[in-house]
Length: 167
Image (cartoon, rainbow, N blue to C red; front, side):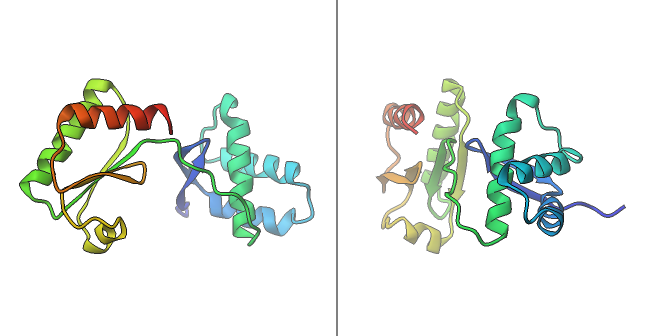
């Protein structure tokens, strides 16, 4: 049995792994190129649901996302879906202060019971892309909020609260 490829796509603001998406897009493009968008959406949903569980309540969001991926694969322009998840990056080479900042954030997220994509980026090119000159730096939802210091936990908590309340 051939192994199906797995791709992550944005569905209703969340990154979801889908098995067999490329095959579903390819077969839909070959057999249903002239179908309406609504028909393609249903065909893609049926094909993808053979390999993935799709909750009935989420079917509409999956359908929109699958059609968006189909159109992208066909070279059509579609608006990108913006993630609604909280993303937090600690920028730095991996020094003690970077580790301290990462631990503080992890503890604060746990205390607040907030899920977030917390990553420590240590690649110089990625760090330079944020325009910071001092590390550790803290980036929340793409915005540099601190650079060169480990901010107080109360300040980190405030930034997280603001970012979580206003995605």
